[in-house]
Length: 387
Image (cartoon, rainbow, N blue to C red; front, side, top):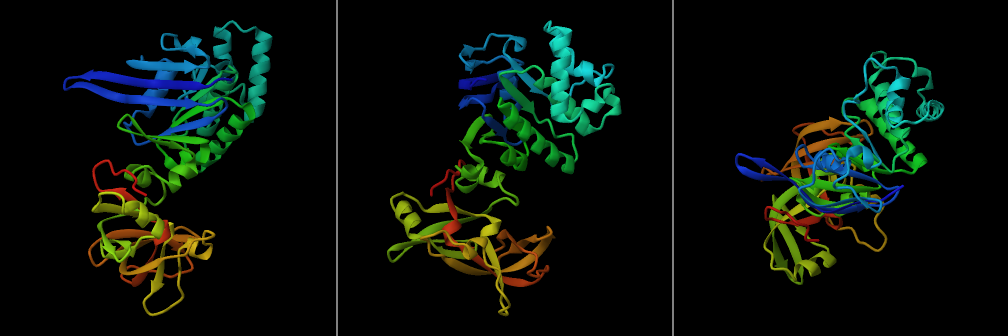
C-alpha cells in the first residue's frame, strides 16, 4: 500500500472576475492504510482535491505523491488508484461480472485471473448471486456494491470515494457506510473519502480534514474535532444539532472572568480565565453543545441536568449557571428530544435532553449551563478558538 502526500497544492480556475482558488495551499499526508475523510459544505473544494489526486484535474501549483512517486504528470491509469463515483458509472449493457472485470480486461489481465479476482470480490461484498444480472435489475445498494467491487478487483494502492452514498436512502446509507469501513479494515488499503455529511464523515474516518472555501480549517480525529473545534465554522458544522453560539463580552469580577451576553452571565473556570486574562480581548463568542445544557422546571419539578453532571470528569468541579428561557418547539427523537428555547433577550438555543422530561411549546424552564463545557471563540470573521 502507500501514503498519499499533498504538498502546498493549489488549484486555480480563471473566470471573468479573475482567478478563483478552488483549492488553496492544501498540505497534508495520508498515512499508509489510513481512512481520511474530506468533509465540508458544497463548493468547499473537497471533490476537486480528490480529482487532483486521481489525475482528473491538473494541479496549478504544488506536489502530489503516492508512495515514493510524484504523480503530478502521470495519467490516472498510471497512478495505481481506484475511484468510486457518486453516480456508480456502470455500463448498462454489461453484466455485473463484466462491469467488475472491465478494468482488468483493459489492462490485459488473463481471463482466469479476472474470474478469480471478480469472484473473490463478489463474495467479499455478498453479491456473488448477482454476477449475471444487468445494472437495471439491481437496487441502488446493489449497484453501489458493484461499483466498490470494480475498485477492489484492481487491488490498488489507494481507494478514492467521491460521495458514493449520496444517492441512497437514509437506512441504506447507514448500512453501506458500515460495510465500507469493514472492507477498508479488511483490505488495509489507504482510503480517501469525500462527503458533505458530517455524521457520515465522523463514523467512517480515522482522521477528518474539514474544508471551507478551498482552505483546510482543521485536521484531526473525529473526537478531537468534536471536542476542540479550531474555529466557529468547524464547531457549527460538526454536531447534531449544531453548537449553540452566544455573542457577548468578558468582564473581570474579583480575580475571575465572567462571560456576559444573550441574557447569560457565566463565570469562567479558573483555567480558562487564566488563559484569557493574558489576551487583549473584549468581545467574544461563547459556544456550548446541546447535550451540555439541561432544563429545570421553575415550579421545582425533577431536574434534567447535563449528562456531564451525572458523570463528571475526575478532578473537575461542575459550575452550573441557570437562565430562564421559554420553549419554542420540541423535536422528539425517541429516547431523547431537542428542545428549542428563546431567552428574554431573543437569543435562541437548543438543548438535547431525555424524552422522559415533558416539554411543550410555551412552557418556561430554567436552562442550566455547564461552564466546564463551554468553548470561547474570537468575535471576528475567522472566529478562531480562544480556549
